[in-house]
Image (cartoon, rainbow, N blue to C red; front, side):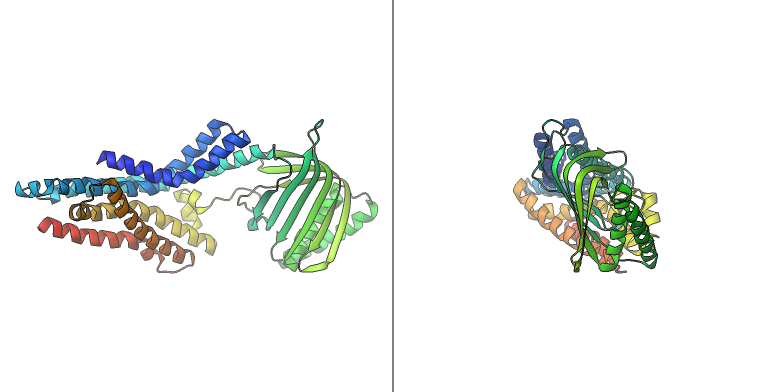
Length: 406
């Protein structure tokens, strides 16, 4: 069974990894990302993928192993010699239990840590790419709703061959959100400060511009959404990996403020120099710190999140139940694969993989349904998430009993 298990593990893992491999090859060939960093990214993704593909590989191995035994009349020979088939089956089910226990242990500590590691490596790669953004291409920066709903699109015409500065820089930013009474008061204060400073600062220094941008962001929340376009004749870009910030220094340009809901509300502010800090696409808290997704949380953090805000608590509970349910598929697949291997006799690898795909499709279809209703807040979710294991285990146990008693 070791050979079919390794074969199944390689095939299923490759299927899950192939999309990431194309992305890594693109980074290596076109963007100059160090090969070691790309390999480290792949290595950090593997444990999470293996936690899904190991039950699938075990299913294929048992189907092929017992299918070969049945086809060669080995099962009949075992029965004729007076050996109870249960003595052959129990070690296989026990192996499934051992794998399930190891996977649960890994899912609670190693896998989320490596998922967080892969997110960090992805950011490192993205920040490396930022220093060499090619001209005439749009690059999207999205901080997400938790950072004020800020989405920016960056573009420039070409680089100065002598200085390396960007020429013809354009940054389009869209803001979304809803205003609270506290934000309204803060916006009014910023607006008053801006009007006062504008009278004594006709050249619009960075301080004046910063007040205008901050006031516009808060006003955006009241009107629904707003857009502003920053245009500049020249600029430089610097990626700060430690702070997870992209700093853009612009000279001789203008900022165009507007709102899709209120086109008449349009303003233009011109500047001699302007600095803008942006964050690439990742979730962050209001303080700018990286916010873990439930998939990246260790067991302690996951339990804390279960008592947090309602949406986060639902996602944390669903993630916790999944970390327990998916490893238990090793036991469920073992129970149903043994009798199927004997009755169906899938001696060919293609036939065994076909049966495996059908069972996997059934299992993950039911599991995804449980996950979706869990995220919707249904109290039925825990049962629904564990139901695929229960269903396959009951059917497999019944068929196994019939096979042993035959």
